[in-house]
Structures are given as structure tokens and as C-alpha cells.
Image 1 (cartoon, rainbow, N blue to C red):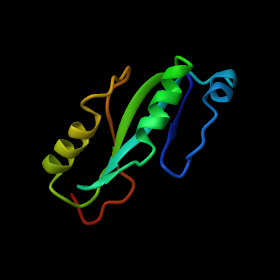
Image 2 (cartoon, helix red, strand yellow):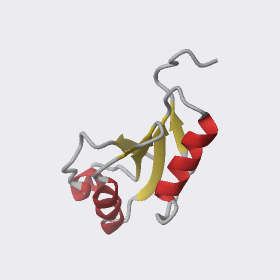
Image 3 (tube, rainbow, N blue to C red):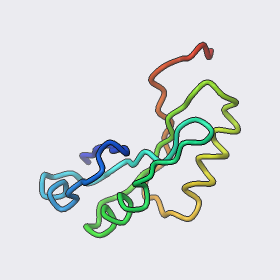
Image 4 (cartoon, one colour):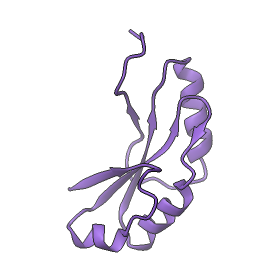
Length: 97
């Protein structure tokens, strides 16, 4: 299966065009750190749902207590339905081991 990931900087995604390009899965950035929530999460979610794409969510990890970050992420996506496993995006170590 082919998939993409999207975040808040991709505000106006044409999900029908995405699907027409052969994409079957979209991973949506839901949260980052302890407080950031993607302001377009719900609209990106409903747009992907409208064209029957499989949906997953990811959290961008920061240098905080990872349990608290996971709890925040889960609290944000709790009411949303996911077809794919949740993912943690680790791009910078910020001193973590």
C-alpha cells in the first residue's frame, strides 16, 4: 500500500487528488510535545474519510516525559477512528537516550 503523511503546514489537501494518485493511506500529524495539537486535524481527518482513505495518526516527540507525551497524544485522538497503528515521529534527539 502507498501512503503519505501530512501536518498542519499542508492546510488545504485535495484528498480526492491524493486518492486518484494511487495513495491508499494518510498519516495525519495529531500532536507534538505536551501541548501542540494540529489545528487542521479534524478537517484533514474528515477530508481523508470522505474519500475512503485509510487513516493513521502520529505524534512528533519532543524532549519531555514520554509517558505524558503519549497521554496527550491519546487524549487528542481518542474520539477519532484509526485504520492504522499509531506512530511516533522522532526526528531530533534533544538529548534523549
